Length: 608
Image (cartoon, rainbow, N blue to C red):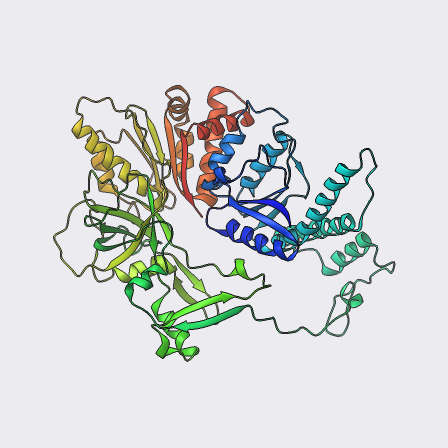
């Protein structure tokens, strides 16, 4: 079979699932896919690769390639590589992203652009799938078009080897490829209509425009609305069929449980799993705050789990017990509650990517092991939302709702979270797993100044930073420690100012040198001047000092929190102050920030 190299770069598993789907379909179409994660550089070599390359790339953060692609991107970004380094390479790329974020599909675009700069050429057009409206709208037709594109590539390559100097002749395969490309463009245009629909435009006007564009009808469409008794093109011109039931795509078997050990194994990943007791739970917000924020302390003293400030870990959570019980009752399977459900996907189905497992939830470590030996803290908001099916009901997030229920019996009221409490209670246990080592850590040299930006629960890793720095300064009283800035924000000073007393302590003892807090919902009192509303506003107010630290003192800036709004707004504020303070265009300021990212001095720990 004709071989092609298939690489994927994934963060949460979607790109991997799609690549595996391509790999399975390849056999049916007469191809052999050599499948690898892009990080497995020892298993492939693009410098000598002669087969066509197919890449599936997701996007993480505010537009970064996934962690698994960082090494690959760094290698191909090497500016010493010649412009024909990949001139022999022919490839097709599928990017995954979410158009709600500013840098849509940027992980794939970075790789796509650089491959072309190094001489590689497309044998198949790039696809950009949007999770905002449904990845499958682009993924499925893109995969369908991949096979004729591959056939045409191999046919063209063979023809060039056999015949030299002959003009290319259009083939049925190339015609099919053109049709698929046209279909892709049509689908992408429909997706854009879903995103930017003009509600003020009448359906009849849209239909008129479609008729003109497609030349399917020479008859002027009258200005009327379609109804159950009167139809308009293109529906009136279509051949309609009675829809059939969808085919079965799952084989389901029930198997008796073989004990706790096997049950635990069913949720394991490549990383080890630790079952640890909850030793303390504290509510950090008042009862009238808009969001309820909890701090949980885990006892890891009897495990091999280790961490440093800035690390993250995963909490392995179950589905809601009451909802599982309700579902079992509806399915009349109450007596099978302790059984395993074994799912097997039938062959020739495209449902694989629509059956994700319940994913572990990542959380930032909010403590230092120097400050709290044998303990691990993390902080979260209890997610709440209204469900309207079939009636409006207040629901809670799968993991945060489960954790809140789990600690309800041992929950302490709003108090100093850093202080020990003698209260004893039965300690519930949860399962946690370490996440791969990241780079969101304090500088090795403590004399380097740092800026921390963390509104709301984004402050979590910075509490660990400050605890760690306090212990280091106790151990090295004559040491040289750089300035530490914290930009924190919340809604109300008296309701959700997280770790207020702890921050005052750090400020009083010189661990924290500058604390800038903004309250987005508190109105100025009397003749008091309006203060900064958001963290990005405070950054702009202190732009001169921030730019000095970053550009003249080789400092680092850390941003933690919401990716959709806060991280983008902070980035824009940094662009503004750099442009203003050093007198350059915004594009040049953006390049400066890109260099800081490359140097690991502009670090983000953000989530959607």
